[in-house]
Length: 137
Image 1 (spheres, one colour):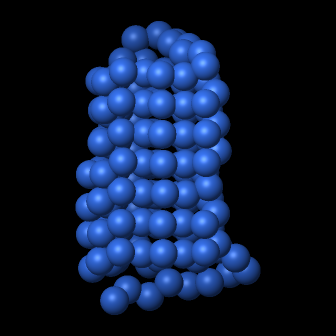
Image 2: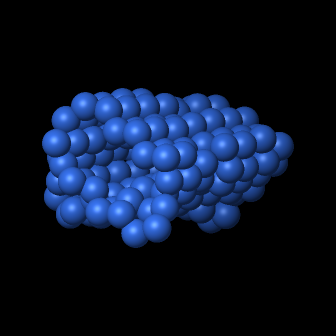
């Protein structure tokens, strides 16, 4: 089992760590670059996943920032906004707020109760939002 460091209601993992199984955190969670969770990731607050990290199953959080080259093999569900950085791979996204997809992202279906912003060229399934705005390619 990997150790989490706590500062207030924010938990921080050590760089390059592995979590064998599911992870549940009631506050905010910061996963530094090259951190790997083999199961599900359930976060009560804000989630930040650093570059080149991975999650073996689904992810749920209040809001999320998904770093570049991150792989999430299950669905990503967020209650508020999500930013997906360059070249991340995610099975699908379901968000209560805005979804921002950066260049090179690969994702299945994306559902948003608000606006989906696409910056650059991505590979995706259906984009279902109140608005879909595409900038450049």
